[in-house]
Amino acid sequence: MNDETNYLSKEKFDEFTKELEHLKTVRRREIAEQLEYARSLGDLSENAEYEEARNLQAATEDRIRNIEESLARARIIEHPKGNIVSLGNFVTIQKQGEKEEHTYEIVGSAEANMQEHKISHLSPLGSSLMGKKKSEVFSFETPKGAQKYKIVNIK
Image 1 (cartoon, rainbow, N blue to C red):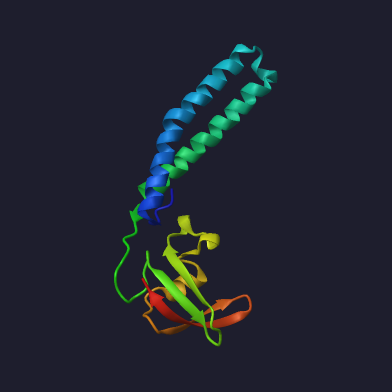
Image 2 (image 1 turned 180 degrees about the vertical axis):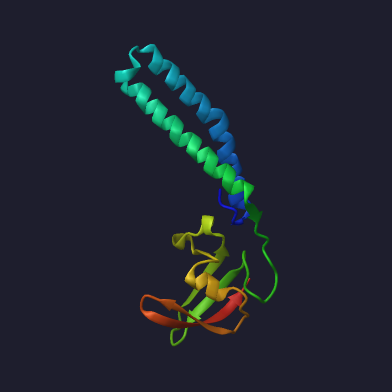
C-alpha cells in the first residue's frame, strides 16, 4: 500500500464514497447472480459465462480495493482564501508576451484532468505555481524549454 497522502476535493471524495457503496452492494450482488446463473449451465471448465463473471468479479474487487486505499489516504482539500497558490485554488496565468489567459484549478493527482483545467500540484506547472503570489513571474520546464508566466489572479 502506498503511504502518500491522496489530496481530493470534497466532491471527488463523495464521488468515490458513492461508487464504493454501489460496488459493495449493488454490483457485488449482480455479479453473484451472474455467477450463480453461469454455474447452473453446467461444466465450469468450458463455461464462457462463468469465466466472464469471474473476470468481472476480479475487476470489481480490484476497483473496490483501489478506492478503499485511496479513501484511506485521502485528505480533503479546503478551498483556501489568500494570495498564495495552494491546493484547491483557481489560478489564472498568462504567458509572457501573450494576451491570452488560462485558469487552472490546483488539485491532487487523482483528480488531474487537463480537459477540465484541473492540474496536479505535482505536475511541472502545478509544482511551479505552488507557494507563488499574485503578479509573481515564474518559469517551468516544458518539452519546448523553459516557459515564463505571470500569475494574474488567485481564487
